[in-house]
Image (cartoon, rainbow, N blue to C red):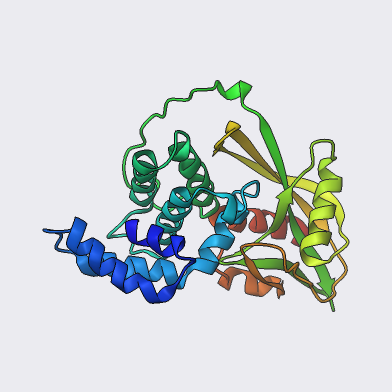
Length: 288
């Protein structure tokens, strides 16, 4: 973390990373045997910086990357790199998150630990909580009663179209390497159906007709100022004309959008909750 902080302080100059790393290992790391792991992790974060920053900004849209405190920013990069690209047998996802939180508590500000927990926890949820059953869950103390937490809504869409008699689904590809559903935040005074139609139009350029609500999930995220927030995602089955998708270049964390025929869906790498929603949608549509 010290090396990444120095690298960031010097405007992400790649040329000084190795010098800083050598110095910090000699200064702070006598007796550390696994220096190879440290070197690989530092170089991995530097190499993947752009992707990591895109994911962070998508998970914390109220906090542009350059507005996040330097310590928090680099703890997030480090924890997120281990979460997304690390060896899960060497560093399980929960361990990566917990270590990042402890770093933030030790070197960051008063609310840094909660902020890191909120961002990485939200991303972990989006990933489908890999390894969540590997060890017993510890009951977490909540400072705010659940029913008193503010609620932020998101809308997601299972978008389908018929092309030459074949059922197709519109999917977006994220920087985690997964094909997933288009979704985004709903404004405070916005109807859920209007919100999902707007999000699909903005993200992939389609006008959709909402058929029915097909599912929802909820998780708790921490905002450094607002505290714990209940994030609710409402999913709708929607129909669209079959035409070329236009991915919004400002959609941080997404790098592709494509139509897939129904028979190709099973071969895609997807999150568990997305797989279940698509399976339910396919069943409904093929039984009609």
